[in-house]
Image (cartoon, rainbow, N blue to C red; front, top):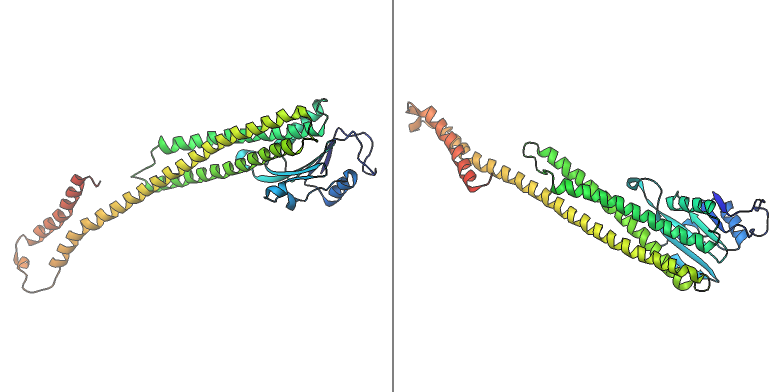
Length: 322
């Protein structure tokens, strides 16, 4: 889908050049004919999705003949739990901004509303700066939401009863769910980090490489964007450290549960040995066994078997094994 901003009322698709009234062309999951149309009207190259997905800095930050070709991953629109990263491309000239994206982005929607409502937002550089600021705001919202999620996980780990001796299966299910929540938080943190670092690289590159392209009045905004990225990156690092700490703690709880289980199995196996031995001895079929002629042999054998099981339990209890 091709959307134009500050567009002329006249039809421009059949014209040889793009009208001067259009300063922003937004391509959302563009078809081939739309991409070729923009290239014909603007005489600039529109990168493909494969080109935007390159991870090398030399492929994401390019300056050619006064045109900046930029790309970065962005967090898709929707609830944080269901977001994903998608490549976004910017082709920036002094007069025109062309954006290429393949998913709905909340930051683009908010800037589009600003362009429609604010007549002073009338330059490609201004719209580009507004897009970066909106992406920073989106990243901050994601980090705030993730911070709240991680706090809830932390409370469930350290303020709840992880062990349930009477219902070990419930404890296992709880720990498994906590591990899942930690994994989801870590995955979304990685996405937020990639998006923020990408925006930071764009702001730094444009501020340093676009001296002739960027008016002096915008340099301060790009510096502010870089500072915002730095502060959010520090907060993301704090959250990542907290996620790693929670992961280590949960794995420690799992190890404790496993040790408790093995301890129970060990006690049961040790306690069962003496009774089994006595029963095996008295169960032998020999003619000359003195116990066979004892009047109280049968109840005494039961008493010996029971005591052989109880005495090890008392000893283990005094040792604090259970």
